[in-house]
Length: 216
Image (cartoon, rainbow, N blue to C red; front, side):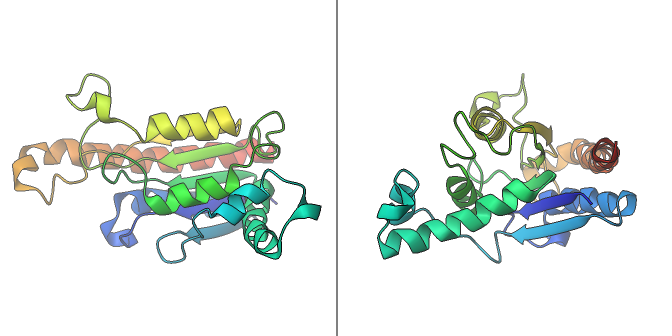
């Protein structure tokens, strides 16, 4: 039975969060197509992981036999998150854009699971794992848009997840999500609605394809 690790980082609940709406659509399709599978849901907004400390950081580059009690305790928390990631057959990440980048809670999770000599570097223990990222944003940052140069979510996550971890990364990008709430963006509401529907359709389609791929 395949295991899906589902990570949400939006501070808003599903009804008010575009990224959560899309990850929810992905997860529901996954369960419909693969009811015997397992879903591990980690909500970083309601249950954040510890930010990296000096003890946790230095422990990752030293022999466990030399760890101080503080290092051992901090590193044990990192290992739990790493093992959870390593057990996953597929990963789903909700990554809304906050102030041009990912939420700090998601960055904290990444800082914990990126460990050179295990998940990153020459070893890459999660190499090839399919990771679907829902990268929602209030505006538009794609090629040719005025804010193209401010796109720091997909660029960053591609570097960390694909280059560092060797994962098979795919993006779903709901954009213009602030249009319904910002009067100055009222004219963009039809584009927002089209982007939202496209993202929901992509989520269902990608989840279906992934379950078939893992079952093959």
